[in-house]
Amino acid sequence: MKAPTKSTVNVGGLAIMPFQSMESALDHVVTEGRVNSGVGVSVNSEIVMMARKDQNLRDHINSASLRFADGIGVVKTVASKGVPNARIPGCEFWEALMLRAAQADIPVMLIGAKPEVNHAAVEKLRQAGLSSVSGIHGYINDEQYIFDEIDAKQPKIITVALGAPKQEQLIARLHERYPHAFYLGVGGTYDVYTGHVKRAPQLFCRLHLEWFYRLCAQPSRIGRQLNLFHYLALHLMRRL
Ligand code: UDP
Image (cartoon, rainbow, N blue to C red; front, side):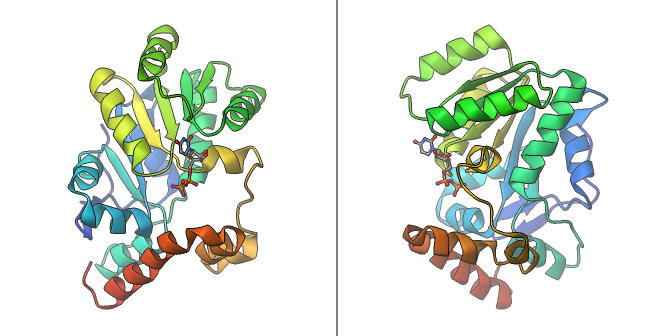
């Protein structure tokens, strides 16, 4: 496994790997067309806040082979500790990883999201040139079915969209059973990729106000968004 550019930086108990570009984080997973097995986690402020209260989640993230800063909050905290680093949005990282998988003919499995979303994501990837891709939606409660599918399809990259911490829990179980694949938790990525959920417009992204856009689009997220203010307060007080 390729080492990250610098040693890790502690953000609220999570050891974040500061990468200088998306490409260097991708190199960590696929090297010369071969997959490095392990687990990848894209860390944003919401996950940091969740992991502060959840020891299992914290252990899962800290034992992952790839832990990169997804949200601007985490990027700023890492930078405030003297280590410049790039923001690598989880959904963009996933798309770039799928492209690499297509180029190297690596078998991929998408787990999670609603049946129609999962199906649409698999189809779109096929059309983009990923010939070996299969999918299992996120609303079946039959883990044996997932095991059977992995046995049959032998994916080398498995991405899981169930929302945190559910996806991390499934990844931990799958990784134990099938340690030779690379796993990535991707949240709502398939919804965005297939156009079922809109990503924030460019202006919001540029101003780092994606969280505000999501709050307006889905006001039910208010409870989760309050965590972001708590994160900001801890960041400003240098308590992370
Ligand atoms: N999801 C799923 N099964 C579940 C719960 C959620 O497949 O039991 C999917 C949901 O359809 C969505 C994804 O998990 O595609 C991410 O959900 P959410 O937006 O809550 O996650 P976030 O990206 O905010 O972590």
